[in-house]
Length: 132
Image 1 (cartoon, rainbow, N blue to C red):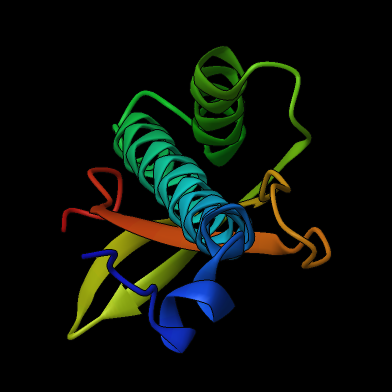
Image 2 (tube, rainbow, N blue to C red):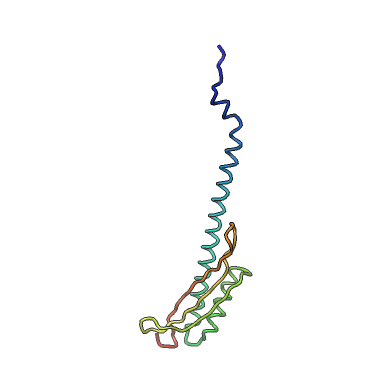
């Protein structure tokens, strides 16, 4: 007896390469989205760490705000490479305590089709010069 191939099996012939391409495209897109997220989180965490370092440095009694800005820019540029980093610092009061606020802004690396955005972070440290 010969087996007769079903009609459904004939229609599925050659569908594996097409399915592979379609699934492969989805996997690549998901991989790129995860890579974009990882890069953005890396930039955010590095900027936060640099801003905290600059705020602590600028809040010391023997240092100025410019010292804090320079320190935060130096740390961020060392960690992020040649990426553009813009820093600023100001004195503020929170619940009666003097604080130094350092703000860092940098571009986020581009992986996907979304335009390059900027990320802005802010860090505070108690100001030793004001007795806080």
